[in-house]
Image (cartoon, rainbow, N blue to C red; front, top):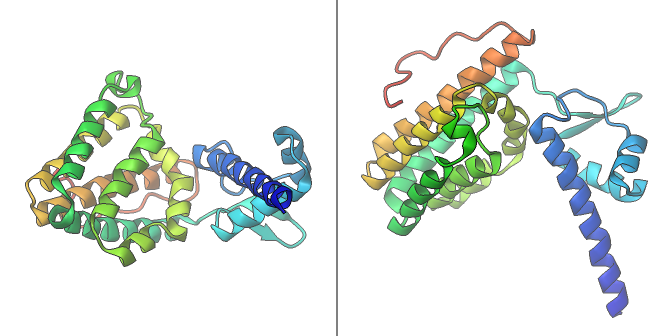
Length: 242
């Protein structure tokens, strides 16, 4: 019995690793939205059999990162500009609310940890040299801590659902613009300052301002690639806290 349990865990771990590798390639832009996946080629490059690979693909289909089309095969999910705008608008509203709640509910120690995290981020070579890349894991950690700090379980679940994965497919685009890493750091500092002051209104505005800026850049990049004309700038206040 022990041997059976051990083998089962190993097999599942292999699926986890394969799914994580493919997921990372999608999030980094190595696998572009709309690109077709070759099961044979992937199995060979990853050094795994088709079984674990197919299970990993099914898992990523469940996360809406991959989609299977009859007579075509498996492709990286491709979201239209209209769909992406709607998802980003939802994220702006929901994370703005989460940040507002975090200003009230997040413990002092956790807010202090955010400040310390940003101090460490400032030492990144990409930030110091004003290059575009802002390490994705650090950015996700910053946002996920604030969402968790909201204390609202339903909100937390919504922000870690399907559209969370779809957003990451496109997020790499906004991280490659020269100087964006410096801007992100400053926007994050504005958010932390509002949290430290326990000002829920300022916290929501700072988070929405940050996400609105990121959304606008993604729209411009997609338009530059010929996917659609640039969307008009958001109405009303745009950079009041930036």
